[in-house]
Every structure is written in structure tokens, then in C-alpha cells.
Amino acid sequence: MNTTRRALPALLATPALAQPLFTRPIRFILGFAPGGAGDITARMLAPIFQEELGQPVVVDNRPGAGSMIAGEAVARAAPDGHTIYLMTTSDMSAPAFFRTIPFDVLRDFTPVARMVWLDHVIAVNPALPATNLTELIALARARPNALNIGSIAVGNAQQLGAELFRSMANAPMTGVTYRTSPELINALATGEIQVAGELLAPMLGQVRAGRVRVLAVAAPTRFPTLPDIPTAAESGLRGYNVRSWNAIAFPAGTPRPQVDAMNRAVRRALGDATIRARLIEMGGVPEPSSPEELAALIPQAVAEWGRMAELAGVQRQ
Image (cartoon, rainbow, N blue to C red; front, side, top):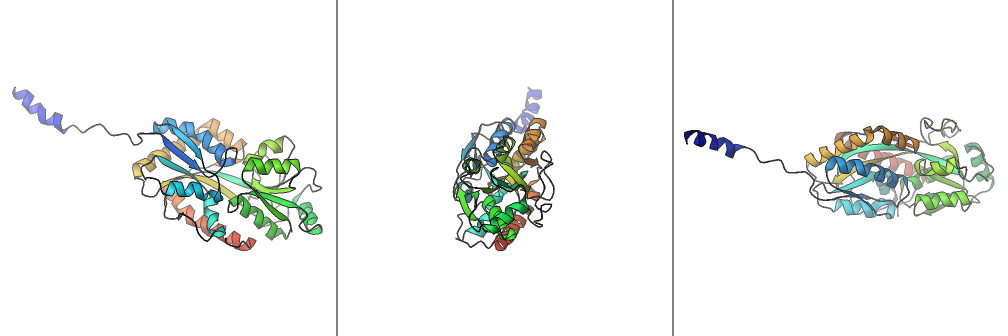
């Protein structure tokens, strides 16, 4: 009896089993339709996130308004770790396009991890008599506003990249926006438009099929898997560097344990050799960050895209 009594306090003092951080399906919200670079990336990574977090991860596409519909849904969600956001540079460029935004990118999200850098490109329909950026600019100047340059979604980083190209190159072309990347790329391939400013990732399939021709990469260096395509600087348009990135964020106020668990899931996914190879093959450069690094990057990116909007002469709507 005495032995039992001595053991009882120790048993009562044993801590309860740790509660799981995630207890129901996780919504992975993104502001893009299926088929674009963001959607491709999200659907590639979701199964790894699911394995790491122990709950189903459901991709929830909410395109429109330069990702503001999706961003608002996340900003207003409960900060319990069960809603994650594919934050992109479109969230950074939106303040340059719109006077009113339904969330504050600096205050309404909890940064988790940057994931992938995505290069922008200037591409043309192969029938256009321009084989490099210099020839395209000369053609646009010779035929003012006769060429259409397409991009996706007003307020999107791709649209700002296209506007910046027109301004820096002094190339008078007519801007046309499409709802999704597949619609834009199909319009370019069929000749509905002659030029497009878009991310490299969703274009690669059509580039390899010969239906779209990339003239230049808007990055400091050539893309590893396309070594024959020059940078904009090499093509004579110095300073035209437009790079996007995507990241994971939670609603503001999400507890640190969920943030750390999600960051580990990102690092595991981007550390997978097959996923890394696929991302590079499709035009991305995987480079995960800490929450603190992403938190420092966001205000820098907002300021940088704001400067680009000024150079492009963008007027807020």
C-alpha cells in the first residue's frame, strides 16, 4: 500500500499527451485559376504538406481582382493554422494599382516561408517578324499601337511587368489583359495577340512545342534550362529586371507552433529532389526562407514594385 501511495503523485504529475497542431482539413487558398504557375506549384506541394501536417490540404482557387479576393479570404480567416495563403508578388504590386485594398499585406498576414523565385519573360507569336528584343522594340515603334501586348489580371505582377516593358522600351503597344495564364498563352499562340509579358513557368510547354517564342528573360542571369535565351540586359534593355516569387502565409495572429510546422513542411517539400527538379524544369528556382526573412522581404517588395509602377506610369484605380 505504501509503495502505491508513493507512486500515485508521480502518475498524476505525468503531462498529458501533446495535442496535434492541425485537427481538420487545411485550406490552401490562392488567387489564381487552375493552370497558372501559382496553381501548378500549389498542387505539386500540397501532398507533401499533407504528409507533414497530418491533415488533408485542399487547394482552393479564388482568382480575380489581382489576388485580392483570395487575400481578403485569408486575412479574415481564423488564425488557427487551418487556412494558408499562396502569397505572391501580385500582393506586393497591388498597392501600386489600387487605391483601396481589402487587406493590408504588411499587417494582416503571418509570414511563414518564401518558396520559389519565378522569372518574367517577354514572348511573341512565332509569326511575328522579331527574333530578339531589339527587333520587337523597333517593330513597335515603327507601327505605334498596332501590336497587342497581353498579360493577366489588372493589378497583377505580370501586368506591371508588361507595363514596365512598354515604358522602359518606349514601345507603343496596346495592352490587353486576360483572366488566366492559359487564356493569355493560348491567345499568344493563336495570334490573337502578338506579344506577352508573363512568367516563364506556365509558358514552357508552349515554348518547347514551338507555338510561343521567348525573346528575353527579365532576370539578372539566363535561366538554367534555357541557356540560349538572353536576358533583357543582354538584349539592350538594361535595368529591366522583373522577378516574382511565391510564399506561404497564415492569417495574422497564427501561433508560432503552427508557423514553425508549416515552415518545416515547406522546407521538406522543396528539399525533395523530384520536386526541386520539376520546379526548375518548369521555370522556378526553389529557395525556402525563414519566417523572419519573409517578413523582411515583404515591405522591401512593396516598395520595389511601387517604384516600378512609377517608372511604368501606372495610375491607381
